[in-house]
Length: 160
Image (cartoon, rainbow, N blue to C red; front, side, top):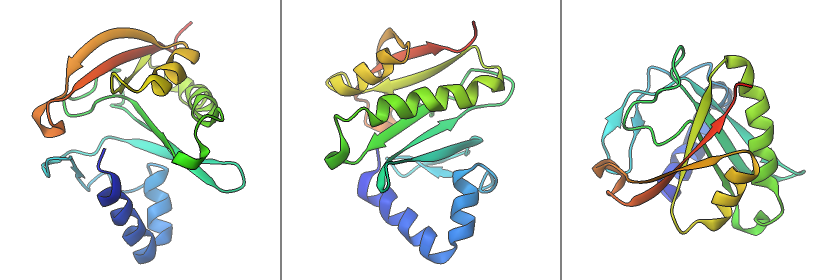
C-alpha cells in the first residue's frame, strides 16, 4: 500500500544490514520496531514473516502476520496475508501458487482461518483468493489511516 516509499525503506535496510533484513523477513527480529501506516501513523508490529516469490529471479513477495493464540487481528491490520507480484510477472499463476504454499506453511499454527482483503476492482486478486478456497465475506470501508477506501474481505478456512 505504501509503494515506492516502502521499497526505498527496504533497499536502505538491505544496504545497512542485509542479515538483519533477512531476520526481519523471517520474523526473527524487529518486533520492537513499529509499522508505519500510509497516513504516517505508527502501530505495533505483529509477528510474521515474508517469502519471496521466485522463478530464478524476483517475482514478488507474500507475507503473513498474526497474533499468537487468536485468529483475530487489531483494527489497523487489514488481513493475515498480503502479496504482490511485479507487473511483468503477472498472469502466470505465481500469486495463486504462492498463496497455496503459504497456507500449507501456516496451517500447523492452528489458526481456524485467515483473512485477506483486496480492492473491489482487483479481479485478479479475487480470483487468486477464491482459487485457494477463499470465501467473500463482504465489503467494508478501510480505516482513515488507509484513506477510508472501499475493500473486500475474504476468509480462507484452515481447519478441516
